[in-house]
Image (cartoon, rainbow, N blue to C red; front, side, top):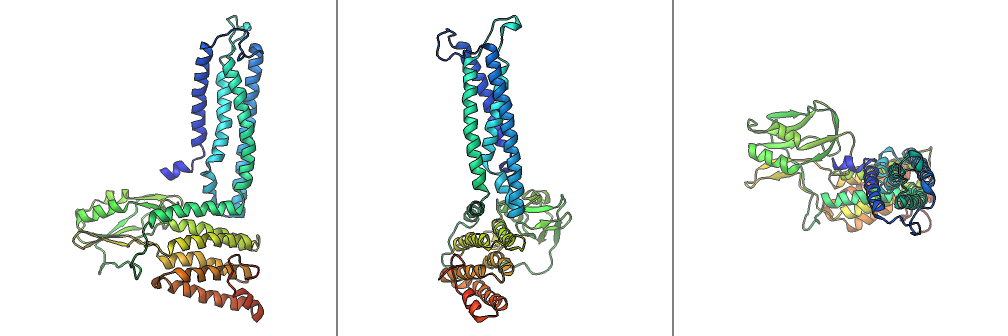
Length: 424
């Protein structure tokens, strides 16, 4: 629910409309208490028709601004999807600054309409009323909108830069990483392995809903269900996996008569697409997708791919000395009650390096940047996390050998470099 609200483009504009309604009411109340002495500095001198003209101009211009902001936003979304990856659109939909700009324009439009209804002239056959404070406030809001529009154009121009998009994805992934893997490795000497109970499960729990992606898991609730029922429970899909209708969602070992299946199903959330709520690998996936798109023949932009590798390097550097939570949980008696599959260190390294190495085969920049990434991680990785890094380094050597048969070119590609190019 929080992810859905965060990605909703209407939330901030709706709040701005509510603020505009409240501001209009407050300005009307103040106008009714202000002295209407003809020499007062705050009075609007244009009369009822002039006030109507000002408010009408403000309202119509704000709708033009709002339409222009909406059009520019759609064009930016289309360009980002084509140039980078469709999966980066969520970062634009969550952009509060763009939402605020649209909200200010829409809110000013609503304010002008509400202020317009309080203007009364002599032609109505009643006492004239010109809400001076409301009219001047509409002028101030219109000036604010002009400044907001200039800021919005600058912000949009900055937001479609590759480094800004990549940094934003990195920051979101880092927050998820720190939340999901908060502890250091300490005295760990090996990775935790997922060991399933012997024999076949006594019960298979299918997924009864519409197909989707596993986005959240309430492990505490699952563990509580398994402990109360006295069984061993295993979640079958991993975070971010696609779950079709009717597929096995849980496996149960033991007597399942006391198991509350409905409670189990309520402990997981299936959504239409992956999110970063609990899925750290999704952030890696977005960065790898951008690197692959940049390395495609149609775009051929290895420098953007190197920038994506920079962010992958930063995330792996933060992760290499983190403790990965155990995939099995035991009760106070030492009995395994819950099994939850998770990506291990090797899976993250393969996700970050494999596809980029394959798509970038033949690029000196990519070969040198990946070598720097792997050699830097090998300098700090504990012994039990070095195997996959050494394997990736051997695969990179083989890739360079295939792509650069000339020894001099191969020697250049074998030189590790943080930027992937230039002297080292």
